[in-house]
Image (cartoon, rainbow, N blue to C red):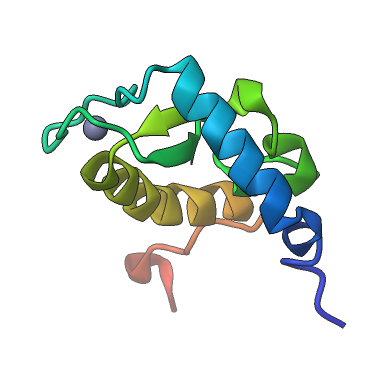
Length: 105
Ligand SMILES: [Zn+2]
């Protein structure tokens, strides 16, 4: 039984499209991330706190947790979140750190 992705699928795409429109209108279609490759005009709805960091992923799906973002910024943030989400999950599971190779006997 898989425990992941089940909550994420519950948000209907219609709801997601409506929130994206609200968030883009609220932020004036201007990217809020302003990263190094920013093009200024936002067409994406970005999760300020990434979905994976919420105990209940549905809690991430609010207007307050969303901001307008352009594609380069959104893509870059998403790529970075893959790494930090894995580190967060590792910490949450209280996995021991990798033993230093020099300590192996
Ligand atoms: Zn941007």
